[in-house]
Length: 69
Length: 536
Image 1 (spheres, rainbow over the protein chains, first blue to last red):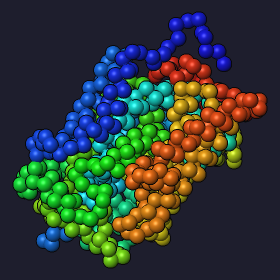
Image 2 (spheres, each protein chain N blue to C red):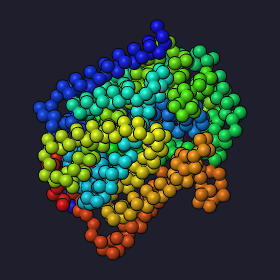
Image 3 (cartoon, rainbow over the protein chains, first blue to last red):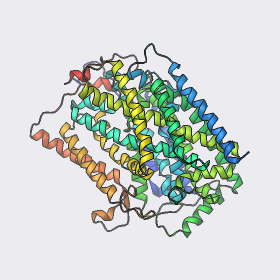
Image 4 (spheres, each protein chain N blue to C red):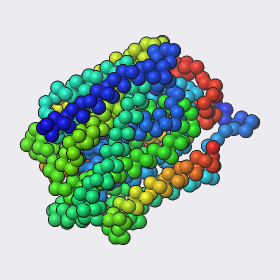
């Protein structure tokens, strides 16, 4: 199997990909959100912050998609 | 009119509408010839961003999820909310991986994950193991969709198994005829109904219950008063590791399920997949709100419907909440959303299971020269067998058995990660090492699940996926997700096995894929179907 073709090989490598690490790691850091206070619209921190991580996920994935298209 | 009758009429009408759609779907985006797995099993491999969004969303967020996740939150609180971080983590995690899987499958005409493993590692044995793991993990999942429908029917006061048999017979008939086009078309209705119902629920119900603040306060009061150690509206010191490993492990497992990959392979290019990875979290938002329905049920004092065994069936808690809070006609719409929500994934799962059988057992071992038309015919028949099997599971066995099996399913499907997931990135592993890792991971995973008791219902084994680290001689009350630990065992054995097999100079299989295959896009040349056979 040859992998070292002389012509410019296609690849999915890009420094932008590192941005994907953020939404993978943030929701797994329980110390960030494992508390009742402060509440937002009645939601304990535990719930509203984790829901907010969805926005981080969408944002990061969208940026990586746009920048590596 | 009797409350249940109104609900039932609305439910039946909506159910009928999607059944007609299921049959009509055969004519939707009609190909010249539907008699191949690329058409019947993958809808022509030509779905754009919108169809894929509805299809994959309708596939991953199943009726069982809608029923079981809030039931878990109702019972245990914060721990049940793991479904949210799980579905936030998963998309960035697989963003690059799925694009590679799509490309290599596009070039080589793969239909199942085992097809890929067959070509990548040149090992029919490893491919068979991957295919059987996929089948075993998927079957109970299909049966569980029936549990979702049953929960809704029970709340409407309908008992007995006849309605479920009829529903699945209709589902089987249109899946047979239309293939993946049926769930793809029905998914539009399913997802639209679910969004309407849940958005209405999270606006209307809190208003009736005095706002979100008082809902959470009621839940907190309930958990504070309960003697169970693990519940609460936040996590405690002992279940944080479980929460994180369960969310991360489930995220790793999700796209290893053959049915998740079916939706991905049906899309027309890499861009569709990447755009969907950014857009699918809309469903995660929905799932987060659905999970919170469990707290609303606590605040509303909802009581689950009694099961046949005389114990309350917690899976009915959300249907019961809808019954209590919504006007009858809208409760009917909500039930239809759950019922139809069961049909879409059940159809896709049975197609995925049928494809696995056809490609990796029938074609590999029974009929090596099978034509496209023969493959399609076998898959159509097997999809019927799979559904009969799922119905029999529910009729003959305790539904709890399906729930246990599904729990095991998540742990065992994770054991295909080194071959399927890492295989997309590296050919370093030796096929023998991967098989050894699989055996070790499976054994470890099933042993750990066996060791988990469930104090709530007095079961000594298979009581959940929270494995106590105390079982390993560590003096702690902390628990960890069994699948996560089993995967670690798998990876270590696979790596050591690879080194040993290399040192002993045991022959490795040939790799039928090349580097460029992993980045190919729509319009790039394809290898003709024969490469699987050629690597014999």
